[in-house]
Length: 127
Image 1: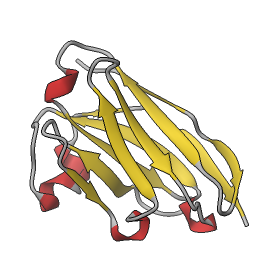
Image 2 (image 1 turned 30 degrees about the vertical axis):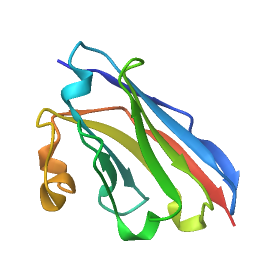
Image 3 (image 1 turned 180 degrees about the horizontal axis):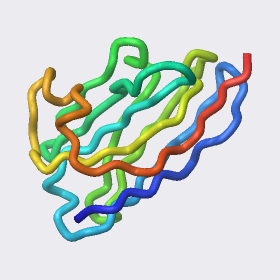
């Protein structure tokens, strides 16, 4: 069982930056694929980024060049650095853990690939 706790959300002006953190419990963190998803009001939860156990990464097109996912296996934490934030980035951001260490592009982007979810962190970007 893995428990995930997100932090770092908040209110920021367009063009600003935030860093989300996701602290994971358990001993096998380094073997998990870790993802970030987001859900805007009235929309379905959508893929943002993933980092696998081999540090390979995937991003949704709308955040490429602005967001960076990283992990610290000593601290059992995954991060999402968000720069040049836009109003349309406003959403609840969820951290997720996948027991399969490495996946291809398609599997990495699917909600059903992930076994554990955090409670979410609100990110609000004012225009």
